[in-house]
Image 1: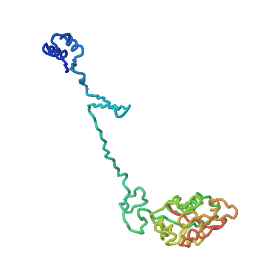
Image 2 (image 1 turned 135 degrees about the vertical axis):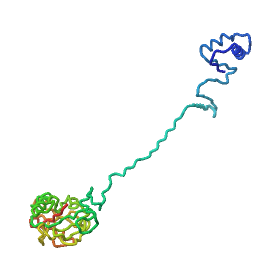
Image 3 (image 1 turned 180 degrees about the horizontal axis):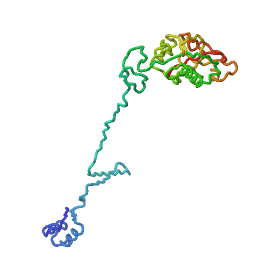
Length: 290
């Protein structure tokens, strides 16, 4: 029994009877009042079988013998309270990213070198990529005196500038070393490769490196025909033609060094690689706009 306020005379009398079972005993009303005043709660039980309180946790401990010399203790605790269950919902995020360029809308966007707003073939803009000019050099060079890949590129640029070709600095030589291929040095254009006079050599990079050209690269920057050997060090695929010395990366004569060369009048594999030639020989270069 739990009392939380001062008991009335009648209640005190009943408590006395309950606690002692007697009317005239030492469990007097004053004793009960003192407990109420001190603790605010009076617990009174006629037996020791249970304990009552106002907590929210009830603990019960029991033991049982599961075998000789073995005792199993069971402790069950029940706690009432508020449990919050959280859940996380990942709605995710999506981003469309930058809008890809639209070929044919008449606007030159990222990755495009032209956009003439039409799909007309042969008008200088194919799949939004400009035609790339190609020529064989009008000058002859010894393989060991090219000045390396950089020197060969500069020779192509100089010839283009002298011929008043637009964007002369965009030209590079079709040339490889043992560690650097022409395929890695040059742009793989989706557009056509054409001669100075407008004749098509290949429809795109894949066609240029297929081993078969539509027309030979036999016209120089001045639109003059040239039928000569050409320094390349390069296979039709654009990879280095291994097995030769590349004239010590095109800047050293060495002793009897050789380098791969092609023929300007050929349209099959031999346009870029026919056989090695001595580095002291005078041959031309293929120059390709990037």
